[in-house]
Image (cartoon, rainbow, N blue to C red):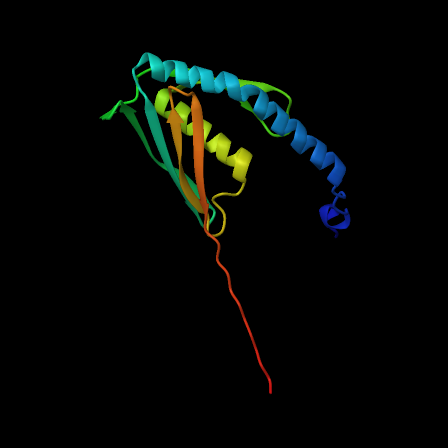
Length: 159
Protein backbone atom coordinates (compact mmCIF):
# COMPACT_ATOMS: atom_id res chain seq x y z
CA UNK A 1 0.00 0.00 0.00
CA UNK A 2 1.37 3.43 -0.93
CA UNK A 3 0.51 6.88 0.23
CA UNK A 4 -0.39 8.98 -2.81
CA UNK A 5 0.78 12.13 -1.02
CA UNK A 6 4.28 10.73 -0.63
CA UNK A 7 4.64 9.93 -4.31
CA UNK A 8 3.64 13.38 -5.56
CA UNK A 9 6.48 15.92 -5.76
CA UNK A 10 5.97 19.32 -4.20
CA UNK A 11 5.16 22.00 -6.78
CA UNK A 12 8.15 24.16 -7.60
CA UNK A 13 8.13 27.61 -6.06
CA UNK A 14 7.98 30.27 -8.74
CA UNK A 15 9.95 33.23 -7.34
CA UNK A 16 8.70 35.60 -10.03
CA UNK A 17 5.07 34.80 -9.25
CA UNK A 18 5.67 35.09 -5.51
CA UNK A 19 7.41 38.45 -5.94
CA UNK A 20 4.53 39.76 -8.05
CA UNK A 21 2.05 38.62 -5.39
CA UNK A 22 4.15 40.26 -2.64
CA UNK A 23 4.32 43.54 -4.58
CA UNK A 24 0.57 43.51 -5.24
CA UNK A 25 -0.10 42.90 -1.53
CA UNK A 26 2.27 45.72 -0.48
CA UNK A 27 0.58 48.10 -2.93
CA UNK A 28 -2.87 47.15 -1.61
CA UNK A 29 -1.72 47.70 2.00
CA UNK A 30 -0.30 51.08 1.06
CA UNK A 31 -3.53 52.09 -0.70
CA UNK A 32 -5.68 51.59 2.40
CA UNK A 33 -3.27 53.24 4.85
CA UNK A 34 -4.50 56.87 4.39
CA UNK A 35 -8.13 55.89 4.98
CA UNK A 36 -7.30 53.90 8.12
CA UNK A 37 -5.09 56.63 9.54
CA UNK A 38 -7.77 59.27 8.86
CA UNK A 39 -10.44 57.22 10.63
CA UNK A 40 -8.29 56.75 13.75
CA UNK A 41 -6.89 60.29 13.83
CA UNK A 42 -10.34 61.86 13.30
CA UNK A 43 -11.75 59.96 16.29
CA UNK A 44 -8.72 60.75 18.47
CA UNK A 45 -8.82 64.46 17.61
CA UNK A 46 -12.55 64.65 18.28
CA UNK A 47 -11.90 63.17 21.76
CA UNK A 48 -9.12 65.67 22.50
CA UNK A 49 -6.35 63.06 22.40
CA UNK A 50 -3.03 64.56 21.32
CA UNK A 51 -0.76 61.52 21.44
CA UNK A 52 -0.93 57.73 21.71
CA UNK A 53 1.99 55.45 22.56
CA UNK A 54 1.84 51.75 21.72
CA UNK A 55 4.56 49.46 23.07
CA UNK A 56 5.23 45.97 21.70
CA UNK A 57 7.53 43.06 22.42
CA UNK A 58 8.21 39.85 20.52
CA UNK A 59 10.33 36.83 21.32
CA UNK A 60 10.54 33.10 20.50
CA UNK A 61 7.76 33.05 17.89
CA UNK A 62 5.42 35.08 20.05
CA UNK A 63 4.71 38.78 20.03
CA UNK A 64 2.17 41.12 21.50
CA UNK A 65 1.18 44.69 22.10
CA UNK A 66 2.22 45.42 25.67
CA UNK A 67 0.40 48.71 26.26
CA UNK A 68 -1.62 51.44 24.59
CA UNK A 69 -1.48 54.77 26.43
CA UNK A 70 -3.14 58.04 25.45
CA UNK A 71 -2.47 61.65 26.39
CA UNK A 72 -4.49 64.81 26.17
CA UNK A 73 -1.79 67.45 26.33
CA UNK A 74 0.42 66.43 29.24
CA UNK A 75 -2.26 64.41 31.03
CA UNK A 76 -2.79 60.67 30.79
CA UNK A 77 -6.29 59.93 29.58
CA UNK A 78 -8.47 57.06 28.45
CA UNK A 79 -9.01 56.31 24.80
CA UNK A 80 -12.43 57.37 23.56
CA UNK A 81 -15.22 54.79 23.80
CA UNK A 82 -15.90 54.86 20.07
CA UNK A 83 -15.54 52.32 17.30
CA UNK A 84 -13.63 52.84 14.08
CA UNK A 85 -14.00 51.08 10.74
CA UNK A 86 -10.70 49.85 9.31
CA UNK A 87 -9.93 48.37 5.92
CA UNK A 88 -7.60 45.39 5.77
CA UNK A 89 -5.81 43.58 2.99
CA UNK A 90 -5.56 39.80 3.11
CA UNK A 91 -2.52 38.01 1.64
CA UNK A 92 -3.36 36.24 -1.59
CA UNK A 93 -6.52 38.23 -2.25
CA UNK A 94 -7.25 41.51 -3.99
CA UNK A 95 -10.31 42.00 -1.78
CA UNK A 96 -10.34 44.59 0.97
CA UNK A 97 -12.06 43.47 4.16
CA UNK A 98 -13.71 46.05 6.41
CA UNK A 99 -14.39 45.63 10.11
CA UNK A 100 -15.38 47.92 12.93
CA UNK A 101 -13.23 47.86 16.07
CA UNK A 102 -13.36 49.64 19.44
CA UNK A 103 -10.64 52.31 19.50
CA UNK A 104 -8.05 50.31 21.54
CA UNK A 105 -8.33 47.33 19.17
CA UNK A 106 -8.26 49.61 16.10
CA UNK A 107 -4.97 51.12 17.26
CA UNK A 108 -3.56 47.65 17.99
CA UNK A 109 -4.71 46.42 14.56
CA UNK A 110 -2.86 49.29 12.86
CA UNK A 111 0.27 48.58 14.89
CA UNK A 112 0.24 44.86 14.07
CA UNK A 113 -0.36 45.60 10.38
CA UNK A 114 2.49 48.14 10.25
CA UNK A 115 4.84 45.69 11.97
CA UNK A 116 4.02 42.99 9.44
CA UNK A 117 4.41 45.42 6.53
CA UNK A 118 7.78 46.75 7.67
CA UNK A 119 9.33 43.91 9.71
CA UNK A 120 7.59 40.61 8.94
CA UNK A 121 8.72 38.05 11.51
CA UNK A 122 9.34 40.69 14.19
CA UNK A 123 8.29 38.14 16.82
CA UNK A 124 10.56 35.29 15.65
CA UNK A 125 13.77 34.03 17.25
CA UNK A 126 15.13 36.71 19.61
CA UNK A 127 12.35 39.00 18.41
CA UNK A 128 12.04 42.73 18.49
CA UNK A 129 10.61 45.40 20.73
CA UNK A 130 9.75 49.05 20.43
CA UNK A 131 6.95 51.54 20.26
CA UNK A 132 4.70 53.51 17.99
CA UNK A 133 3.90 57.19 18.57
CA UNK A 134 0.67 58.50 17.10
CA UNK A 135 0.98 62.30 16.87
CA UNK A 136 -2.56 63.52 16.33
CA UNK A 137 -1.67 67.11 15.36
CA UNK A 138 0.72 66.06 12.60
CA UNK A 139 -1.27 62.89 11.80
CA UNK A 140 1.87 60.79 11.78
CA UNK A 141 2.68 57.42 13.22
CA UNK A 142 6.34 56.86 14.09
CA UNK A 143 7.69 53.35 14.64
CA UNK A 144 10.79 52.95 16.82
CA UNK A 145 11.98 49.40 16.18
CA UNK A 146 14.68 47.44 18.02
CA UNK A 147 15.65 44.01 16.74
CA UNK A 148 17.36 41.57 19.07
CA UNK A 149 20.16 39.65 17.39
CA UNK A 150 21.96 36.69 18.88
CA UNK A 151 25.43 36.07 17.54
CA UNK A 152 28.07 33.48 18.06
CA UNK A 153 31.70 33.54 17.06
CA UNK A 154 33.94 30.53 17.05
CA UNK A 155 37.65 30.49 16.55
CA UNK A 156 39.99 27.53 16.60
CA UNK A 157 43.75 27.69 16.31
CA UNK A 158 45.95 24.70 15.77
CA UNK A 159 49.67 25.35 16.02
